[in-house]
Length: 240
Image (cartoon, rainbow, N blue to C red; front, side, top):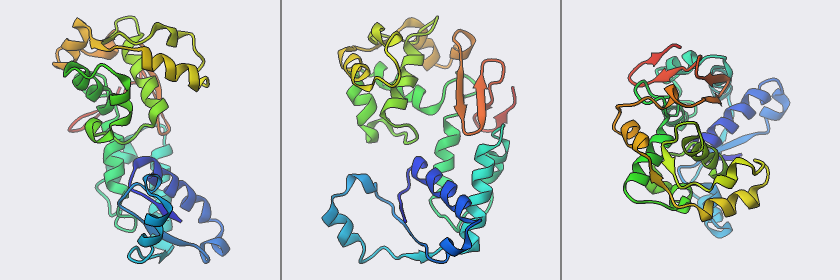
């Protein structure tokens, strides 16, 4: 099994190992490779060359216990166990702690009610990045790793199409396009020309809380985040 360092890959890894824990006959035949590069971005030749210097290791009780503990924490109905998790020994799966730090950063902040990716969107739009291609596809520019392209679109829609939008210029047709209609949604994103509203500038400056003016309803692991149940995270975790 190959897994890279992105949060989504690490979540798939711990889910799978937690499942395999109850199937020791399969665990005995399983080898694991952990890689620091994005596997999907490599061509077949590059992956073949990687085999020579990336060791495959046995999956032992340490990996299984770490994965199970971490997966159960992520699926819990509150994020409290995940805060404790990043201070525990996760060395059996060495890419897990950075992934969970990234995941925790996507909890709503204490001051703005937005996660790291949403705030980064506001920062980039304020700097003049008006096209969704830059926001969705330039990962090194965005500097957040948790969401895929379509999830990024849903986050942007939340910022732009609520009762008090922080972002202007997102194609209004997105209100009526089904989430599964990826082609039409993609075309609507390409038509968009983004800018910050006056409210968005105050949120970016930390003087307004986005969640006080707009509906919040999304999942973070097993935690449902809503306006009246908004777990927040900064230097510490704040209960609703």
